[in-house]
Length: 138
Image (cartoon, rainbow, N blue to C red; front, side, top):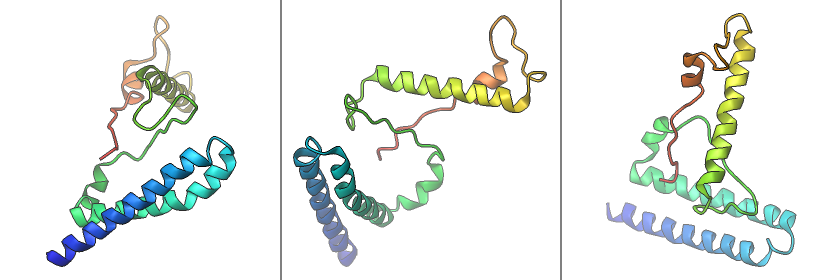
């Protein structure tokens, strides 16, 4: 147990160093050259994800992976930062996704199976295309 605790602490320290390096790139490189930032950050992001996966395994969170969604929607843009996205941007994006999903379902089942009544889709299509959301930030 002591060995595992020590290894976990080392991995947490490594993760903190990788995150600090990424923040440094974000501060120093991103404002000057977005493409260079993406190229330079790629290896750090990969290492951060690997370390997080190892930490999750040590903590027993890897068994919970089956509970995670198969679909992940991420938002990127000048006004969107991790943990600081405005709810209006998130809801607009999710609503556009939901409407697109409804259109795809209607196209897939054909017009004879999905008649609209008074401008609304069938209730089962609306329910199917309005999945629950979860914050994946463990």
